[in-house]
Length: 333
Image (cartoon, rainbow, N blue to C red):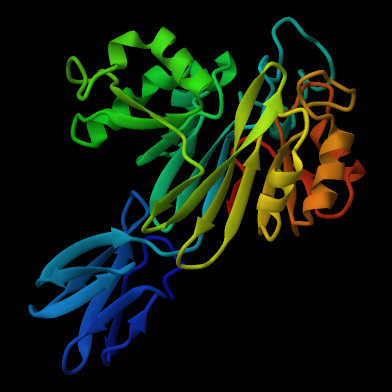
């Protein structure tokens, strides 16, 4: 059982498939021990040389001692923030939501962190990004995607500097739209380099988001969503080992037909659901619920929420299968 964190396990096995995509080959029984390290990776300890360990389709030679590989536990989605551009509580507001003692009503600006077969994907960097990472113990970042260039999604990107350090002082690839890349260039001109200008600084490699990023861990598909005078990236993740599918459609006034089709068959969906009242560039809660019904996923969460929605009351008013997200919510798909 590889689901218990930080537990030590020992077994004697004939050559056999382990944990879905981990496979030993060789003669005779294999004695092994596995534990989860602080980064959520699986550390395999093998007492003998000459075994071949196959992880997610890539061959690795195993020697006596420790080998670190991704922990295959299914896709995980971490809501770093679920609030609108002003956040909740809002400055100089004494409404019952802004003064609520329910932690679910405290909403930092919207972003999510997706772990897909051990690959860590960060979507957007809110002004609170550093604090969100500390709160949720985010220690790894392999891919960064900026949905669009509005301040509440781009203002925290300077704090990506730490993750540049953690990948050996190299530039972090940033996927976005033309509008998003233009905003990053305008705000962070000092970060446009193959490597940081000095240790501890950020460096970004701007890359236009393609229709699909095909990786060993799965695919990330993109579609364009109308958001006032610009388009936002809608993202669809499909994990290779499990086939699980996750959809993230934030900051949009509507979801076009082709985006609905792309989202169908998802195990979980996140939709922009700004407030009960209509808005010119965001979906209202009723509009988001209508899109959720059209997509037909078993579970949908609303994000980018304002102080006009009290969490418990909103949750009670929504139809089955639709819930408000909250900061710190973790989904296991």
